[in-house]
Length: 303
Image (cartoon, rainbow, N blue to C red; front, side):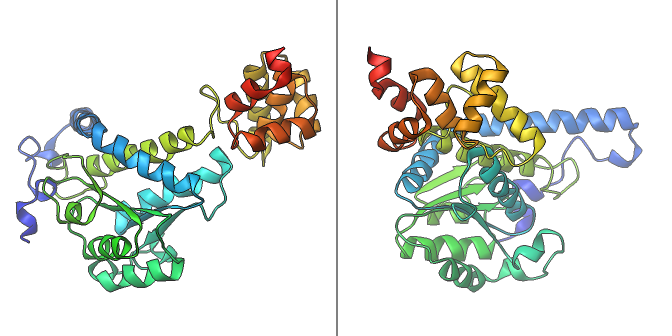
Protein backbone atom coordinates (compact mmCIF):
# COMPACT_ATOMS: atom_id res chain seq x y z
CA UNK A 1 0.00 0.00 0.00
CA UNK A 2 1.25 3.46 -0.93
CA UNK A 3 1.29 5.30 2.41
CA UNK A 4 1.17 8.68 0.67
CA UNK A 5 -2.40 7.89 -0.39
CA UNK A 6 -3.62 7.59 3.21
CA UNK A 7 -5.53 10.52 4.65
CA UNK A 8 -3.45 10.44 7.81
CA UNK A 9 -0.27 10.84 5.70
CA UNK A 10 -1.53 13.53 3.33
CA UNK A 11 -0.46 17.17 3.65
CA UNK A 12 -2.94 19.42 5.44
CA UNK A 13 -4.24 22.01 2.98
CA UNK A 14 -4.42 24.78 5.58
CA UNK A 15 -1.02 24.45 7.26
CA UNK A 16 1.47 24.81 4.41
CA UNK A 17 3.15 27.71 6.20
CA UNK A 18 2.91 26.32 9.70
CA UNK A 19 6.46 27.42 10.48
CA UNK A 20 5.62 31.05 9.77
CA UNK A 21 2.47 31.36 11.85
CA UNK A 22 2.24 33.32 15.11
CA UNK A 23 2.02 30.89 18.00
CA UNK A 24 -1.57 31.80 18.84
CA UNK A 25 -2.66 31.12 15.23
CA UNK A 26 -0.79 27.81 15.21
CA UNK A 27 -2.50 26.76 18.43
CA UNK A 28 -5.90 27.76 17.07
CA UNK A 29 -5.29 25.53 14.03
CA UNK A 30 -4.34 22.64 16.27
CA UNK A 31 -7.41 23.17 18.44
CA UNK A 32 -9.66 23.21 15.37
CA UNK A 33 -8.06 19.93 14.25
CA UNK A 34 -8.81 18.38 17.64
CA UNK A 35 -12.47 19.13 16.98
CA UNK A 36 -12.22 16.97 13.85
CA UNK A 37 -11.11 14.06 16.03
CA UNK A 38 -14.11 14.47 18.32
CA UNK A 39 -16.53 14.55 15.38
CA UNK A 40 -14.88 11.50 13.81
CA UNK A 41 -15.43 9.54 17.02
CA UNK A 42 -19.06 10.68 17.16
CA UNK A 43 -19.63 9.29 13.65
CA UNK A 44 -18.23 5.93 14.76
CA UNK A 45 -20.38 5.54 17.90
CA UNK A 46 -22.53 2.65 16.56
CA UNK A 47 -19.41 0.58 15.86
CA UNK A 48 -17.87 1.56 19.21
CA UNK A 49 -21.07 0.44 20.97
CA UNK A 50 -20.80 -2.98 19.32
CA UNK A 51 -17.16 -3.17 20.43
CA UNK A 52 -18.16 -2.33 24.01
CA UNK A 53 -20.61 -5.25 23.96
CA UNK A 54 -17.77 -7.62 23.01
CA UNK A 55 -15.46 -6.28 25.71
CA UNK A 56 -18.15 -6.43 28.41
CA UNK A 57 -19.02 -10.01 27.41
CA UNK A 58 -15.36 -11.01 27.71
CA UNK A 59 -14.96 -9.42 31.13
CA UNK A 60 -18.14 -11.06 32.42
CA UNK A 61 -16.78 -14.46 31.37
CA UNK A 62 -13.49 -13.89 33.16
CA UNK A 63 -11.75 -12.98 29.91
CA UNK A 64 -9.58 -10.01 29.10
CA UNK A 65 -9.51 -6.79 27.13
CA UNK A 66 -6.22 -6.88 25.23
CA UNK A 67 -4.99 -3.83 23.34
CA UNK A 68 -2.57 -4.51 20.51
CA UNK A 69 -0.55 -1.80 18.77
CA UNK A 70 2.76 -0.26 17.75
CA UNK A 71 4.27 3.13 18.46
CA UNK A 72 1.83 5.85 19.52
CA UNK A 73 -1.18 3.59 18.97
CA UNK A 74 0.19 0.90 21.28
CA UNK A 75 1.19 3.46 23.89
CA UNK A 76 -2.34 4.86 23.91
CA UNK A 77 -3.68 1.38 24.60
CA UNK A 78 -1.17 0.99 27.40
CA UNK A 79 -2.20 4.31 28.95
CA UNK A 80 -5.78 3.12 29.09
CA UNK A 81 -4.89 -0.31 30.44
CA UNK A 82 -2.74 0.86 33.34
CA UNK A 83 -5.50 3.16 34.61
CA UNK A 84 -8.08 0.38 34.93
CA UNK A 85 -6.85 -1.19 38.22
CA UNK A 86 -6.90 2.04 40.27
CA UNK A 87 -10.10 3.29 38.64
CA UNK A 88 -12.16 0.10 38.47
CA UNK A 89 -10.44 -2.28 40.87
CA UNK A 90 -9.58 -4.71 38.07
CA UNK A 91 -6.78 -7.22 38.27
CA UNK A 92 -3.75 -5.89 36.33
CA UNK A 93 -4.03 -8.96 34.08
CA UNK A 94 -7.63 -8.17 33.11
CA UNK A 95 -6.90 -5.20 30.81
CA UNK A 96 -3.49 -5.44 29.16
CA UNK A 97 -1.56 -4.11 26.19
CA UNK A 98 0.76 -5.85 23.78
CA UNK A 99 3.14 -3.26 22.36
CA UNK A 100 5.29 -4.06 19.34
CA UNK A 101 8.85 -4.40 20.60
CA UNK A 102 7.77 -5.18 24.17
CA UNK A 103 7.04 -2.96 27.20
CA UNK A 104 10.35 -1.14 26.79
CA UNK A 105 9.08 0.29 23.51
CA UNK A 106 6.80 2.55 25.54
CA UNK A 107 9.73 4.88 26.23
CA UNK A 108 12.25 3.88 23.55
CA UNK A 109 11.26 3.12 19.97
CA UNK A 110 12.11 -0.40 18.78
CA UNK A 111 12.73 0.08 15.10
CA UNK A 112 11.14 -2.45 12.79
CA UNK A 113 9.00 -4.15 15.45
CA UNK A 114 5.78 -2.82 13.93
CA UNK A 115 6.65 -4.42 10.58
CA UNK A 116 6.71 -7.94 12.02
CA UNK A 117 3.30 -9.67 11.97
CA UNK A 118 4.82 -12.77 13.55
CA UNK A 119 5.86 -10.71 16.56
CA UNK A 120 2.20 -10.23 17.46
CA UNK A 121 1.55 -13.96 17.01
CA UNK A 122 4.27 -14.78 19.53
CA UNK A 123 3.06 -12.09 21.95
CA UNK A 124 -0.54 -13.35 21.82
CA UNK A 125 0.54 -16.95 22.32
CA UNK A 126 2.66 -15.96 25.31
CA UNK A 127 -0.43 -14.31 26.81
CA UNK A 128 -2.55 -17.42 26.18
CA UNK A 129 -5.25 -15.67 24.18
CA UNK A 130 -8.48 -17.65 23.82
CA UNK A 131 -12.23 -17.48 23.10
CA UNK A 132 -13.08 -15.54 26.27
CA UNK A 133 -10.83 -12.60 25.33
CA UNK A 134 -11.38 -9.51 23.17
CA UNK A 135 -8.36 -8.21 21.28
CA UNK A 136 -8.46 -4.57 20.15
CA UNK A 137 -5.94 -3.78 17.42
CA UNK A 138 -5.09 -0.07 17.17
CA UNK A 139 -3.33 1.48 14.17
CA UNK A 140 -3.77 5.03 12.93
CA UNK A 141 -2.78 4.03 9.40
CA UNK A 142 -4.95 0.94 9.57
CA UNK A 143 -2.28 -1.22 7.97
CA UNK A 144 0.44 -1.85 10.56
CA UNK A 145 1.72 -5.43 9.97
CA UNK A 146 2.09 -6.16 13.71
CA UNK A 147 -1.59 -5.35 14.22
CA UNK A 148 -2.77 -7.14 11.07
CA UNK A 149 -0.91 -10.29 12.10
CA UNK A 150 -2.17 -10.04 15.66
CA UNK A 151 -5.83 -9.63 14.77
CA UNK A 152 -5.65 -12.46 12.23
CA UNK A 153 -4.11 -14.78 14.82
CA UNK A 154 -6.51 -13.72 17.59
CA UNK A 155 -9.48 -14.62 15.39
CA UNK A 156 -7.94 -17.99 14.61
CA UNK A 157 -7.69 -18.60 18.35
CA UNK A 158 -11.40 -17.83 18.77
CA UNK A 159 -11.02 -14.44 20.46
CA UNK A 160 -13.34 -11.56 19.67
CA UNK A 161 -11.59 -8.87 17.63
CA UNK A 162 -11.97 -5.11 17.28
CA UNK A 163 -9.93 -2.80 15.08
CA UNK A 164 -9.43 0.94 15.54
CA UNK A 165 -8.11 2.81 12.50
CA UNK A 166 -8.06 6.44 11.40
CA UNK A 167 -8.46 5.80 7.67
CA UNK A 168 -11.43 4.36 5.76
CA UNK A 169 -11.35 0.83 4.31
CA UNK A 170 -8.38 0.01 6.53
CA UNK A 171 -6.72 -3.40 6.04
CA UNK A 172 -7.04 -4.15 9.76
CA UNK A 173 -10.82 -3.76 9.47
CA UNK A 174 -10.96 -6.97 7.43
CA UNK A 175 -9.59 -8.89 10.42
CA UNK A 176 -12.02 -7.57 13.03
CA UNK A 177 -15.44 -8.75 14.16
CA UNK A 178 -16.12 -5.06 14.82
CA UNK A 179 -14.13 -2.57 12.74
CA UNK A 180 -14.02 0.97 14.14
CA UNK A 181 -12.87 3.61 11.67
CA UNK A 182 -12.49 7.15 13.00
CA UNK A 183 -11.53 9.07 9.89
CA UNK A 184 -9.46 12.02 11.07
CA UNK A 185 -7.76 13.07 7.82
CA UNK A 186 -4.50 15.01 7.39
CA UNK A 187 -2.56 16.16 10.43
CA UNK A 188 -1.56 19.77 11.09
CA UNK A 189 2.01 18.47 11.06
CA UNK A 190 1.99 16.14 8.07
CA UNK A 191 2.02 12.47 9.05
CA UNK A 192 2.29 13.10 12.79
CA UNK A 193 -0.51 10.78 13.87
CA UNK A 194 0.28 11.34 17.55
CA UNK A 195 -1.87 14.47 17.06
CA UNK A 196 -5.57 14.28 16.19
CA UNK A 197 -5.41 10.61 15.15
CA UNK A 198 -3.89 9.84 18.55
CA UNK A 199 -6.54 11.97 20.24
CA UNK A 200 -9.29 10.04 18.45
CA UNK A 201 -7.74 6.71 19.42
CA UNK A 202 -7.54 7.75 23.07
CA UNK A 203 -11.18 8.82 23.01
CA UNK A 204 -12.16 5.41 21.64
CA UNK A 205 -10.10 3.58 24.28
CA UNK A 206 -11.69 5.75 26.98
CA UNK A 207 -15.10 4.64 25.74
CA UNK A 208 -14.27 0.96 25.38
CA UNK A 209 -12.93 0.52 28.89
CA UNK A 210 -15.27 2.91 30.72
CA UNK A 211 -18.51 1.79 29.06
CA UNK A 212 -17.59 -1.89 29.45
CA UNK A 213 -16.82 -1.38 33.14
CA UNK A 214 -20.18 0.36 33.58
CA UNK A 215 -21.86 -2.64 31.95
CA UNK A 216 -20.28 -5.13 34.36
CA UNK A 217 -21.17 -3.20 37.53
CA UNK A 218 -17.94 -1.35 38.22
CA UNK A 219 -19.87 1.94 38.47
CA UNK A 220 -22.81 3.04 40.61
CA UNK A 221 -24.54 6.14 39.27
CA UNK A 222 -21.55 8.07 37.99
CA UNK A 223 -19.25 6.97 40.82
CA UNK A 224 -16.18 4.72 40.53
CA UNK A 225 -17.22 2.48 43.38
CA UNK A 226 -14.60 -0.20 42.68
CA UNK A 227 -11.58 2.11 42.91
CA UNK A 228 -8.59 0.98 44.92
CA UNK A 229 -7.82 3.52 47.67
CA UNK A 230 -4.05 3.03 47.58
CA UNK A 231 -2.94 6.58 48.40
CA UNK A 232 -4.20 9.62 50.31
CA UNK A 233 -5.94 11.12 47.28
CA UNK A 234 -7.78 7.90 46.49
CA UNK A 235 -8.68 7.29 50.13
CA UNK A 236 -10.23 10.74 50.25
CA UNK A 237 -12.04 10.05 46.98
CA UNK A 238 -13.36 6.73 48.32
CA UNK A 239 -14.74 8.49 51.40
CA UNK A 240 -16.49 11.09 49.24
CA UNK A 241 -17.84 8.40 46.89
CA UNK A 242 -19.38 6.45 49.77
CA UNK A 243 -20.86 9.60 51.26
CA UNK A 244 -22.36 10.63 47.93
CA UNK A 245 -23.74 7.18 47.09
CA UNK A 246 -25.21 6.57 50.54
CA UNK A 247 -26.44 10.16 51.08
CA UNK A 248 -24.53 10.52 54.31
CA UNK A 249 -21.75 12.61 55.86
CA UNK A 250 -18.01 12.00 55.47
CA UNK A 251 -17.50 10.81 59.05
CA UNK A 252 -20.17 8.11 58.65
CA UNK A 253 -18.74 7.15 55.28
CA UNK A 254 -15.27 6.80 56.78
CA UNK A 255 -16.55 4.56 59.57
CA UNK A 256 -18.34 2.33 57.05
CA UNK A 257 -15.24 2.12 54.89
CA UNK A 258 -13.16 1.07 57.87
CA UNK A 259 -15.66 -1.67 58.71
CA UNK A 260 -15.68 -2.74 55.05
CA UNK A 261 -11.91 -3.07 54.87
CA UNK A 262 -11.66 -0.04 52.58
CA UNK A 263 -14.03 -1.51 49.97
CA UNK A 264 -16.35 1.26 48.79
CA UNK A 265 -19.00 -1.05 47.32
CA UNK A 266 -19.36 -2.95 50.59
CA UNK A 267 -19.54 0.28 52.59
CA UNK A 268 -22.24 1.70 50.32
CA UNK A 269 -24.39 -1.42 50.60
CA UNK A 270 -23.95 -1.47 54.38
CA UNK A 271 -25.20 2.10 54.67
CA UNK A 272 -28.06 1.76 52.16
CA UNK A 273 -29.39 -1.54 53.54
CA UNK A 274 -28.49 -1.41 57.23
CA UNK A 275 -26.41 -4.57 56.88
CA UNK A 276 -23.02 -5.39 58.33
CA UNK A 277 -19.91 -5.97 56.21
CA UNK A 278 -20.38 -9.74 55.98
CA UNK A 279 -24.00 -9.39 54.91
CA UNK A 280 -23.12 -6.65 52.41
CA UNK A 281 -20.37 -8.81 50.89
CA UNK A 282 -22.83 -11.68 50.53
CA UNK A 283 -25.36 -9.43 48.80
CA UNK A 284 -22.64 -8.18 46.49
CA UNK A 285 -21.48 -11.70 45.64
CA UNK A 286 -25.04 -12.81 44.80
CA UNK A 287 -25.42 -9.74 42.57
CA UNK A 288 -22.27 -10.28 40.50
CA UNK A 289 -20.67 -7.22 42.06
CA UNK A 290 -23.43 -4.79 41.05
CA UNK A 291 -24.32 -2.34 43.83
CA UNK A 292 -27.74 -1.38 42.48
CA UNK A 293 -28.78 -5.02 42.15
CA UNK A 294 -27.45 -5.84 45.61
CA UNK A 295 -29.37 -2.99 47.25
CA UNK A 296 -32.59 -3.96 45.43
CA UNK A 297 -32.16 -7.57 46.62
CA UNK A 298 -31.71 -6.62 50.26
CA UNK A 299 -34.55 -7.64 52.63
CA UNK A 300 -34.01 -4.34 54.44
CA UNK A 301 -34.52 -2.47 51.18
CA UNK A 302 -37.79 -4.30 50.49
CA UNK A 303 -39.15 -3.75 53.97
